[in-house]
Length: 327
Image (cartoon, rainbow, N blue to C red; front, side, top):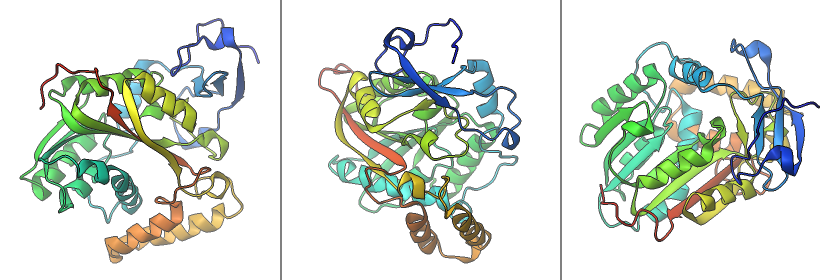
């Protein structure tokens, strides 16, 4: 494979991919599923840390247009975001909260949370409803214009006592936070270290960063667009450590890659039929049952070295941002 003469730098260990050598695989995508004009055709892997980078690179302008104009979420109207309408996303949020809650409980005061790429904001809702946690403020960064308005409408109606702020960029967020969430964000960036370092700057003393992202999903998904960086457990651990975080825990979760409903496994069609049926009946099914279904369907709470997600929890390393004031 001939790579155009351009400087390719590993987004984790900063080595030159061209100088250190690299391997490539085909970028899995279904061109008929999305009207985006330009898509990567290959993934280049760093020989040092194993992280993969989509190639050729898309421009920042292309990506901003895609995410800000509802290209990712495919939203068309402002609405109240209900767990019953998005049961799969809600179930994933409850699985993430199981990891976050034990460390947050150690903070003996009201909690401030920053959710970067919050989607429907379900993780914030789960935290707000938890009687063992006092969520004081919930700040959101979300690129999608329609989704931002839906988040405001939802929180003003359902959680009026919790301070809410919704912005389209991290630069617009002021203050420092006890917990910062990056769920399915880092894989969408060419420069994930830049994002993580900016997030670390907004951590309160003793604060935590939680990240959840796919585990090498090019190995099992038919379509990975718009994912740009592909992590394994080692490369995510290195990214945390190089960004000024002391790793508290990291593990993989979910069904085995080849057995995932999102993959190419032999039961994929059966899984899809079952999910479509369940989704059509979602308004008639209690949320607690929906949550259990998706826990089983995706294996959301199953610790599995070959699982489809990597979840990491990091704490600000001593000496980073020591002069910052608490939000």
